[in-house]
Length: 323
Ligand code: BT5
Image 1: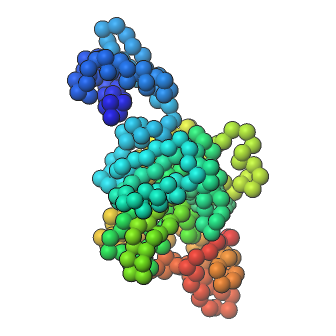
Image 2: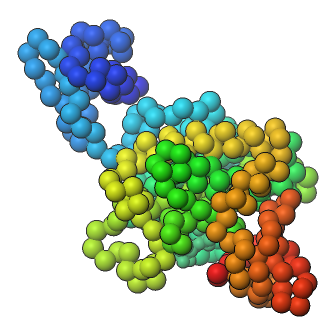
Image 3: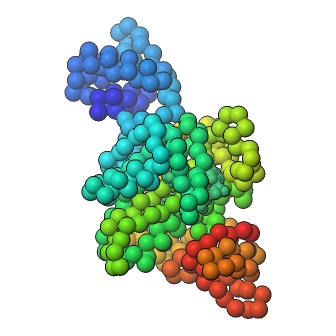
């Protein structure tokens, strides 16, 4: 808490701020401020100290520590509480354990490194320590029917795309059902998992993985070469992951509340506008066999509607699209 308050004081000052003023703002002693500054320096913050002028923040590292993440939260529920982990098998797995033990709606789990990041259907999500943003949220959508929960994938994808478009000016598009793509390459994957009874959702775990920096070495080669996008390369400068996380959570909270209050229709309309799938000839690996045709719609339940060459319309609720 002290670190957060000191960092916040340094950021607000936008220049030098005295130790006395920081101490007053944080409600602690000047000695505690001195220790907090030393801790922040050890964590990679560059802080200048000058006699009679105080402290000045010169630069911040791209870190995902809880005090840095919480500083950029603009949400009411999402991100409260926060678990920032150095290393975990999968943030979705960790969040699920938390949810089972009663973690509240909005609980955020973010990790610097995932050792067993998951995609859908047992696939792997690859991430790189220091270069990726991987996080999961515990959601408790009270009153929503389990059959409507798959819409959350679209809600989340739209929220990520909106944040990237509005805050970073990136032409982010949505590839049905769970990818955010830029220039046809996958920048972000979304994994929605749910625990429910026939007519009651216990909780939903929403996991989001984003490639932010290009990993060092040849780590993006092999299977992901040419298929994965890296955010920095579209922004033209290194993106701070804590800031990005704050922007995505704000956007997500807005989309989520709209979805709860107004239903799926408005979200669906915007998803369709940003879709990179609609209007194209696609091949879909659907659970009951391959389907090929033109993707013509996303229906009121989030299913992809494909018009086959014979003129028949097929609704696909889950699958992988190759365009
Ligand atoms: C997804 O699955 O795209 C869901 C990814 C969700 C990852 C987040 S990270 C935080 C949370 N914790 C987890 O354990 N998971 C979530 P799917 O549509 O099945 O896509 C998986 C496929 O995407 C893989 O088979 C690869 O082809 C490709 N892929 C894997 N890593 C990638 C990356 N970093 N960038 C682009 N594509 C990737």
